[in-house]
Length: 370
Image (cartoon, rainbow, N blue to C red):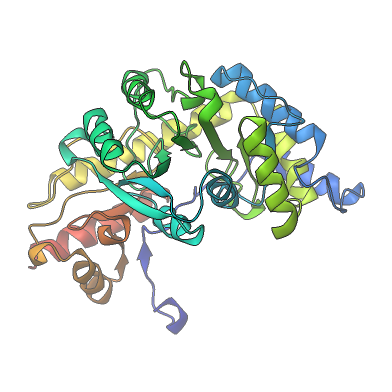
């Protein structure tokens, strides 16, 4: 539609609407002007790996050797895929809690494994139920990996330290299961303490956890394509070998920008973005609450997504709802079916308040017309 000149209001994009910090942009420019335009080590520059290790130690309480336990990749997505390649293979199973990021089950299939969908409950805020996880693992002895996206895309749910500890307790019974902890949204948390516990920091979990993080969501550096994997040496070494045959190093310029993001950006910049995002979340929740047949049982506490239940419309056919909404109101949302959550739609509030107001008006008018 946009290619044909029509104006579409879109709440589909999973990236911040603000620009990266100026110091990050300046660091990228300085790197180019200073000749940092050549290949780096496959695993990343020493400066960036050191900065990552220091950040994880000071903020998350986990200590990694920057030389042997950190691999910088071309975005967190590459790191997720390589982590799966290192942890499992043909004939294995990967536990994927639903709702899920659509790439998770597809990546499991790409490595030759079989995705096993672990259903969660809307009443639990779509968080993992430890008892359900225990039952799933007991029924699937071939499971080698648990995907843990915290905070969650697409739900915005945040697993508390208490719940993560309960999950870790269950995993003690299944020592062959590796946890792939995708924590890319961990700087966008709206609880009172604003904390998101790193799964690797829990007792007994460091040796079996592959942590994924990056700069796209926290520092609005989506186009820089810069992420990283932090894991015990056996996993990090395997992923570095894989990366050496797939893409080699991440961009040298992006890596210089990443160093600045970790060393030069004041926490107040990040905290201010959290305040703004929370205001947008609250506005969307407030507007959704006014719409008949739309419900959000548990308000999301992280990321920048809301996954409301709209199953009272279209007999739960969320895809058709989104198609008609786009056609009639020029409003684009993502069907929940894409995330293993039929009867829902994903709303990204990582846009301007003006755009959100327009979108909520369009959605309300559309539903009222049915």
